[in-house]
Structures are given as structure tokens and as C-alpha cells.
Length: 190
Image (cartoon, rainbow, N blue to C red; front, side, top):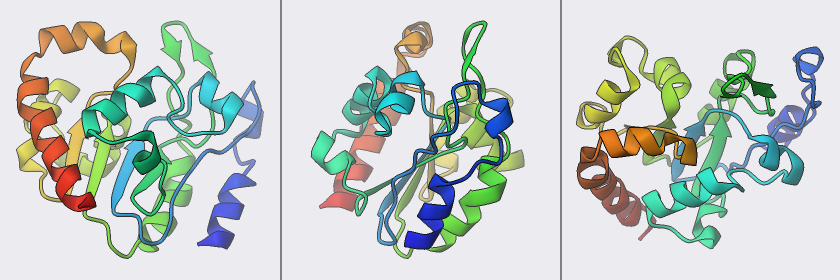
């Protein structure tokens, strides 16, 4: 695992497409229990090098019902983005994750994990990649159908503060999905 992580952290495959430079962000141990597959680091995470070290990460930890200490314990949570580097800014937010990373690194990482109890798929990129044809037409439909993917996967929207409108339109999410998520995470970690 150590060599693989070193290779990922030294990756420069898409360096020419990254205006802010490469800085692959990943946190994982062979005995990680819960895998969180997100989109790509944002600008703050690119600066700090700490995954989910931003308002989205704070909200995600609230959704999971875990402390910072538990969340950043790689023996508990593997934090693996679809794109390992910050992709840069687009017209309406960050650009999509670079498409090279997941096919290049994910299988090698996941094959080394020995005791995964749950994979949390955050956002449409992770859901399309991992659920494939089983994902629904929209992210909302996929998240609403979360029970179809249990016990292995649970799909979530991105916890970004920019998704406040989605949260207000989909009040069922907190009642139905987050309750199940928090209980599942608590059971796995206890």
C-alpha cells in the first residue's frame, strides 16, 4: 500500500491540464472500514493537502455523525476522490474531476482493502462510475433509491453549501437517507 500511495502522490499524468499544478490528495489504509469516493479536491484542499478540509467536509462529517478525529482516521475512513487533484475553476464552480484518475488508480487501491463494510458514493461522477447502468437517470433518483444499492454502496449528493437549493427541494433526504447512513456508520465503527 505504501508504494501505491507514493505512486499516486507522485502522479503527473494530467499535469498539463491542471492550471494550479498537481497535488494528488488521498487517505487510505489497508484496513479502512468505510470508503468515501468523492469528486475532486477543491481549492482549499489543494492548498492544505487535507481531504475534505472545507465547508463540504464539515457538512459531510455532520451527515456521517462522526468527529474530525474519526473521519481522519484512515483505519476507519478511506478518502478516495474520482480525480485526485484540484481540477480548477469553471463557469459555475469547480471543473469536473479529471477522467484519468479513477481508471488509473481506483482498482489498485480498492483491491488492497481487506475489510470494507460500506462505500459511500458522493456525486454523480462516483455514482455513474461505480453503479454504471444501475444508477438512475438523475442524481436525485439515484440517491432516492439508495436502498437498492445497500448493503455495499450508499449514494449521496455532494455536501457542498452550493447544494442548499437541492436540500430544500428534497427534504426526504435528511429524514430517509441520513438517518440510515448515520446508523450504518455508527454500527460499522462500534
